Image 1: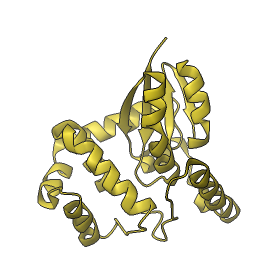
Image 2: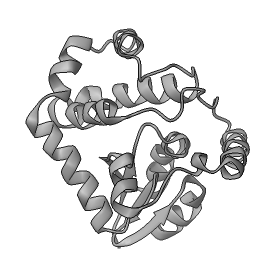
Image 3: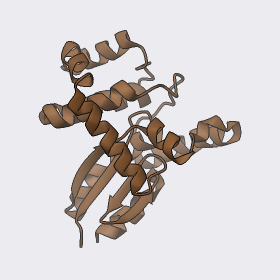
Image 4: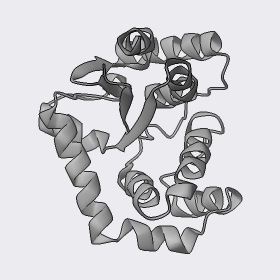
Length: 196
């Protein structure tokens, strides 16, 4: 049995944020390794022909209600970001960059950006706001700019995104336990079952 959960995510997904609030404890209970797999959700949408539920007004309204329900169930803070959706290319390059180059800062980066987007409702599409969020988290905004322009980082994000599509991913969050795929933060119970 495979005791690893691969977590394909994009910071711009509110459902990925909710999953992220639960996954570390879930993996700890199951004695499983959590492997973060940053991907570019826009690239996945482009490759699969999928789109955000927010692009359909009725789905968007329902999605907001459903996300709030899950946040209450999980007992975590959540506020839908009025700036949603934003282009997350720089944010996801940052995730890959911190994961590859400064892995000790990777979780701090995720915590700061998920919180800024889905709790504090900050506009991370604004470079000045993003720089402030990074600085507040004790991360170097100038170093971030260097990280996101690194060719190795660009290629790694592209490779993660292409691999996700090849494995059947069509949205975020998506989880793999071995070859078994689960889509959506509301499928975490099935992820936990697959680990038992």
